[in-house]
Image (tube, rainbow, N blue to C red; front, side, top):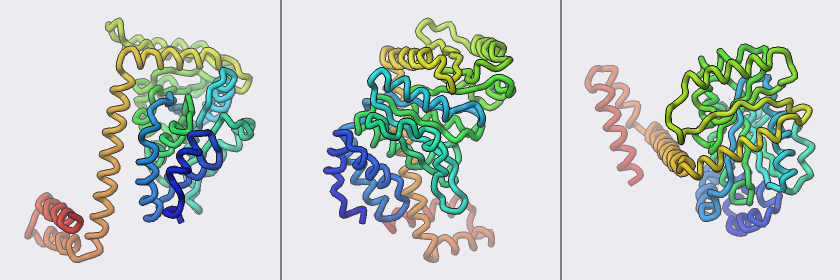
Length: 327
């Protein structure tokens, strides 16, 4: 079915902002079937000349800090400035269907009728790191569809959240007072990945102390380089739309710094290299799976157990077999 779609036409319609075309392309890149993966290649080729314009913002942090509320409020603030916004809300997979739980789209329902907002919930399908394997491709779809800003909201599972950095131009780490987040951020390594800190629910007791703790930790890891990015700490009450202008200003300032310093280009080159590597490894696993179905892998396993060959040599033989089987 996917192969019969007119992908160039879908891409052209998506570039004109047609929600239906954007949705069809997103469905294509999420498909985890052989036909879907073949269509994905065609979609990726058609999208390539039209990407690289959107400012990609990743929002991460522990559960309960208000990521979805903040994302929704941020969408409203960006739309008030006339910007087109895409949202990729990466939900935990349903253990029964493998699909997204869609809680984020329910919470962001106020933007559902806005033609300048594209919202997509994506299932992680068990993928660690807080992101779906197809997130990079979905990001390209929204970029090509003319989004000025694409927000990636991750599931909030702790230390593995740092994977969002691989995709984002700007990483926002949200914390909340009264949760011990200052200490936990340092332990989990989240401190290092943040470009902008947000202390949400700033109307709660302990918010000023959380801000002070963060600023103190930032100062401990500071640099003497005058051109280095100075990470701000923004206080918000997203449920009441408070502090959102300050957050948008911090994102814009970081975007300008990225362009002026050349850091955006460096990050995007690293992102592309990582994506190429991931696709290559995925292709290799698929080919190994094909070899696994034959006699190659079981025979090599038997020889390793029998002490006739070591596992490193077996891996070399298997890799050679994969190459000859597909070359």
